[in-house]
Length: 310
Image 1: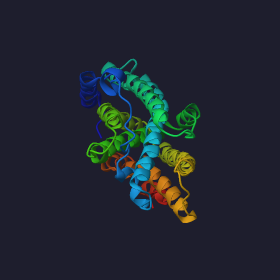
Image 2 (image 1 turned 180 degrees about the horizontal axis):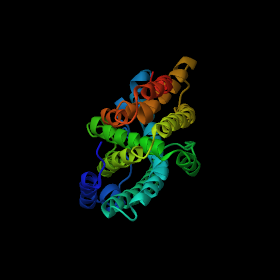
Image 3 (image 1 turned 90 degrees about the horizontal axis):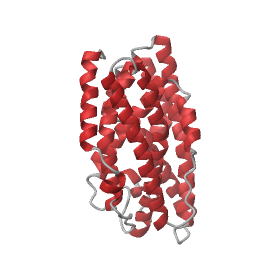
Image 4 (image 1 turned 180 degrees about the vertical axis):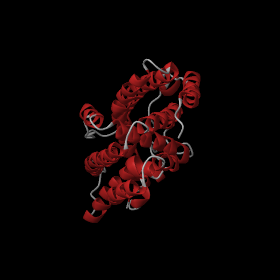
């Protein structure tokens, strides 16, 4: 793909223009003095996979979605801890070059800091209306340090995957569901508006980074990406266990062992779909990745992801 300055600069400029036009404020535009509505779902059924637990009552299914929705917001606060720094890192290549690209990436990092604050606020609001005992297991700074130690190609691939599935989740599920908490829904509407520009910048920077690599370096980067996907899955395993325990402890009745297992399976399957599967299966992500790697590398990725996807 042609990544010359003449080709890329207008795309960076468009991201700046849109960023300025849609700029929003957490209090003035998003929260507006509101609280979460705990009489409504947070996550749509297609993301929460609540159909996997049909033995739960309607109220219990709503709580199931709210536990997942709380983790959903916290997960984005987590990943943005490494996304912003990585964008500032890759902006170095533009410091004495394309100043339009530099501005676009600095604005990107600034918006990611704002998103972190938004999701910290959401955790406070969720805690106000939910039973005590919830724990978000991963430590954001530790995760960020571990991710940022990987190759830039792999990190940019992970970032691109994340921001493309953000858009897919909103457009295909969240936006269309009339039964969600109004505030929770608005949070992810405003989040998606800015992530639309971020996804374009992810693609530009990932392709630009790919152009620097020789065949051996790219092959190593593919292994790094696989390792990052495995690390994400490790986080999901821990959080699914914590959320299962919390949900069962606060349910108000005791489920049979088979039902408890079904809840655990549903949490993990939903989280794997939300944070990995929906990204790797995204058509745009597949197209970008497919333009960089060869057939053997693609098969290696597919084999590594198969236990997660299946």
